[in-house]
Length: 197
Image (cartoon, rainbow, N blue to C red; front, side, top):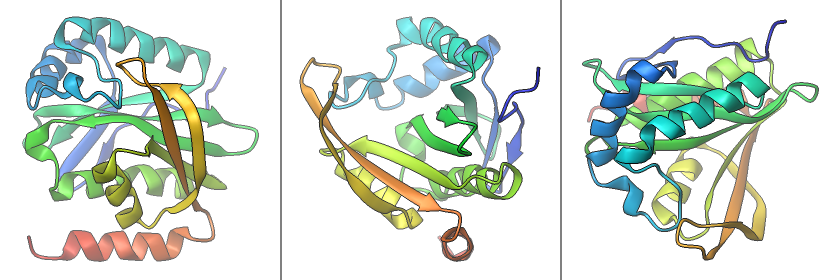
């Protein structure tokens, strides 16, 4: 039985995305230690000792057809994080880009833009998605600004939507990019990536 979407490798200029594998465990542990990302209270990122379980959880969701997880690497091939297509809705050709975290040393570089450019291009041009969602916590202003810089529009805020890692209630901002918007978003992302750093 074929799955939609199917595992694949995506190559950019400053990043590459490859199907998540248990073999990536040690590299992911090193990456999550860069900034001690598990201490962010408003999101859920695995601690080093929980990384094996997190890999297994994502691969189980892949087997169920609701997630396509990736390991992300920088231009040198070093593992620096994870991302995924998630909440996959094949009949309506919709995916969410999410469950993303990136080592602090790679944040605020071209890396995130390049990763999102690859995922969006594959979603709209190969998978023929109608829309792609991106979600983040209301209080995660850095993530919200990054999503807005991509060209996504705020659809709304799901109030008291989920439990944060500390047990508090999280309001979730839901953004999307539609198929009709993709050509202009693509041009904008290409312009951003071409700018000198």
